[in-house]
Amino acid sequence: MLDVQHPAHTVGGIFHRLDVEWTALCAATDIQAAVTDWLVTDRLADDVAAVTDAVTDGVTDTRERTLGPAQLLAALRPGSGRLTDELTDAVLRALLRRAADHDRSATLAARIVVQSMIPAAVRITRGQIRPFGGRSFDDIGHLTVAALFQVARSGRIHTRPGRPAANLALDTLRYVCTELAADREAHAEDLAAAEDLPDRAPGPDRMAEAAEVRTAAATAGLTPAGPPAEAEATSARLELLELVLDAMDAGALSPADGRAIAWHYTAAVPDTEAAARAGTTAGTWQRRRSRAVARLTAALALQLRCAA
Image (cartoon, rainbow, N blue to C red; front, side, top):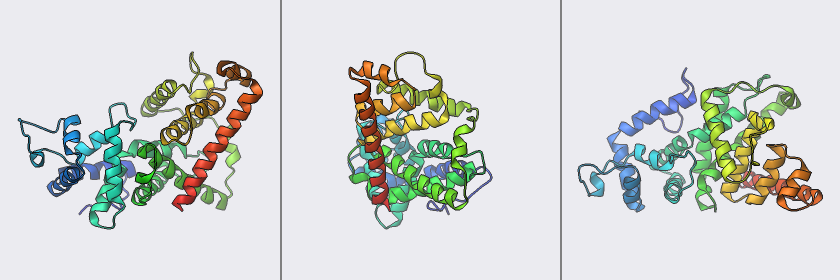
């Protein structure tokens, strides 16, 4: 029997194991029936069926449609890779409401949420790898998945304004960072040395993710016009850019706040140039950036206190 709350560790790693379990979940008829009942009850079945091509051979009865975990995942992961449309938010909020209950279906709902957030979990995991004695990728991956599951079950995300997926990612990141910071402090790890170490060469998957982040950032006005600056290529700066994008989605930062942070820290735009583009003075721009950083820090700290 599948243990959706405690996926086992295998040689293939935690994310491989989750994908293997997911295949079994999608094939289980009782789980497909449960998911269909959820969607019918929440009045989301027609919309999910429409966007996932779940109606076949002219079938119109909702209960005869193929609406299972696979269709939920398709609705939760639009083709662009960013969870932004209204239906995606509605489906995710409905799952999070169920995940906050205390029955077996809550565990299943949380497990589906975890599967939908695997791309974000992988990015969080990669962002916390340290090549100088830190935890392994799979070790941090287990921590990230456990944190994501806990956040999904907490009952706090679906009541917040903003994008639920961005809120999930932010809370999960804070859990992981807090846990790793305590671990590193206990082991006296020299975190300052990280800034002097070169980034590892990214693989094709990470390069594709980085391109997606840059596209989203350009759309949001977070990157200046012209070719990407050399500073933007490092994984640390890409992670920061992604964090700013998620914070904007969650409503923690305004577009102006995001630009003030991103132009300085991810594109290395000089304050005088940035101020000229924004139609203000360098001193005013610096103060704006300082306030934006303070807002982001305060928002993340508040989320961490609420989650404790």
